[in-house]
Image (cartoon, rainbow, N blue to C red):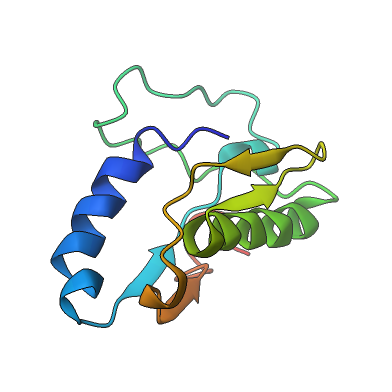
Length: 116
């Protein structure tokens, strides 16, 4: 679990919105490709460049369970600042926004990307 590229962007967004009293909708619309059978996909060298091939790959037998666990952990990291990962390790250092996250949209436009 590596939030290096997510954290600065999310922090700037939350400082400009939720911490000023505005309600926010957190939306992580694309699931990680490792949850799918995507053997040809490789991460881009530059994380700031668009990756138009990212959402491709058929479902695996455990994809929906992986997605459920992933979003639960992501939510806990954002709201509580920590979660227990799939190996039983406590991942800490999350922003712990708590109730500042008033809305959560999970799997926006499921007919796009991996077509869940």
